[in-house]
Image (cartoon, rainbow, N blue to C red; front, side, top):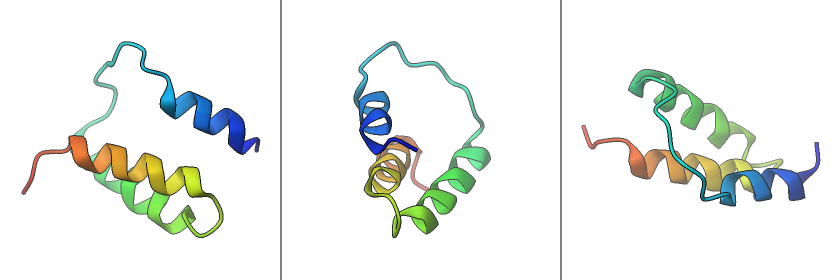
Length: 56
């Protein structure tokens, strides 16, 4: 997978749409944290998603 393309996709400031539930977002964040060791973009995306979720 091309990491430069992934960076380009997460940095795109296009229109936001609600696509997943909070539970799904939390699961994705956990999975991305597991991938962080192999791909820096996964950690960045996990952090961006986590900041958008409401605190529990």
